[in-house]
Image (cartoon, rainbow, N blue to C red; front, side, top):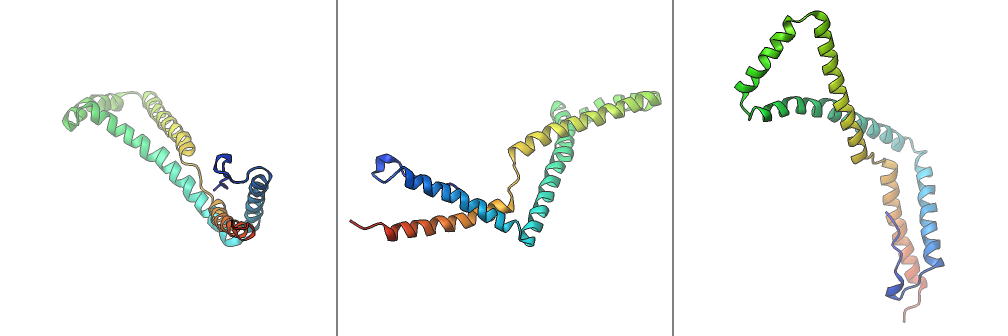
Length: 162
């Protein structure tokens, strides 16, 4: 939430008053955030929401997307025909089962690395695209909306009417 400063074209005052109000806004916001960080209930809510956020991002990135890609891409390439898909996979599965244990281990390792690389790529983009919204910031936004309203009321009472 930002304080809207009037533009010079609308005939209202600009300059030191708006800068002082903007500075007072950020000082009050920081003061309020420091104050609510001491409240145990909000601190618990912060940690709970942070853990839920991280768990959700990791589940989406490492379980949903790689599994979705592993099944969806071959299904699309087989024109959604499961018979063609299974006929293409069966020889590869048989070759895997007939291969030496070292080859099987290398194949499983390659699949694991592929899964983790896809998951890591999605995790990075997911964390960037959906940043964590702190309960402290939410509480500060609510407080600052009330503070802005009180400032408007205070300014309208001190400003003489024409």
